[in-house]
Image (cartoon, rainbow, N blue to C red):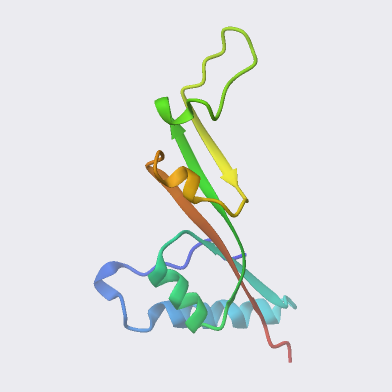
Length: 119
């Protein structure tokens, strides 16, 4: 799994990220690994970059943060005297629009994978 590939903003679009990925691929292959998995959020630029690097989108789900009134009629405690203030959730359904009008913080988490050419 790729946790981070990052390039300082002063050096964007110079091929550095691609070179980092190529080196990671070489090292992974030398270790006998056959695939990479990379997760990102709903940043179209980053998703396009992974696709350009020959990763395929294989999965996604949503992070939804509920705060205060956003939880009303959605998330409640059944434990006496336990009051929910915030909630961090994963939504795997298809009807995300139901949350977009009342929640400020919704992020799609996207999984990409790339199979490596083992020699």
